[in-house]
Amino acid sequence: MIDISTPASRGYFTDAEMRCGCAVCNHARSQGERAPGCASNMRLEFMAHLNRVRERVYCRPMPIASGFRCEHHPEESFKRRRAEQAGKPWIPGDHPSGVGVDVRVQGSDAHALMRALHVYNWFHIQNNLPQPFTAICPHQRGRQQGRFIHIGGNVEAPGRPRPWLWTY
Ligand SMILES: [Zn+2]
Image 1 (spheres, protein in one colour):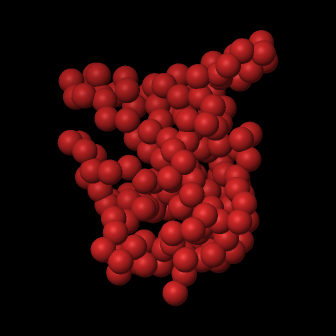
Image 2 (cartoon, helix red, strand yellow; image 1 turned 30 degrees about the vertical axis):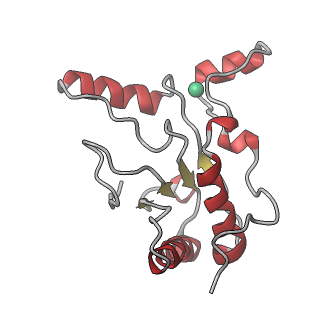
């Protein structure tokens, strides 16, 4: 049994890895101004789940390749433009909702992290609670440094089925 209710003993993720790293945000920071995409835009409940998984189930480092993304981030502005061109509403994904991270892992670490996230979800199912991680999606091709597992915590919305599995 793992403790899925009390907080982890500490926060394992830094503001620097959780904040948006887009050009607009970086420029604002370089000017001493508040950037649109801060680490504090991440939802506290999602971060609590991530910290518990890190401390109690996975028990290994979880380097963050991408955390919060503001609307100016190229990945998000691309998705919004694509939706506009298709005449569809833009549904914010996990990163701009403050409930998404990409963890830079591959090989056996990637296997163990996928297992840890599903085990953590399973404990919630056993307790009649919603699954905290509604997207556990591997990108495991190409150069090793570019590989990651996306972890998302969004709830279902029109145009955004959850839980869901996709690959890259
Ligand atoms: Zn940004």
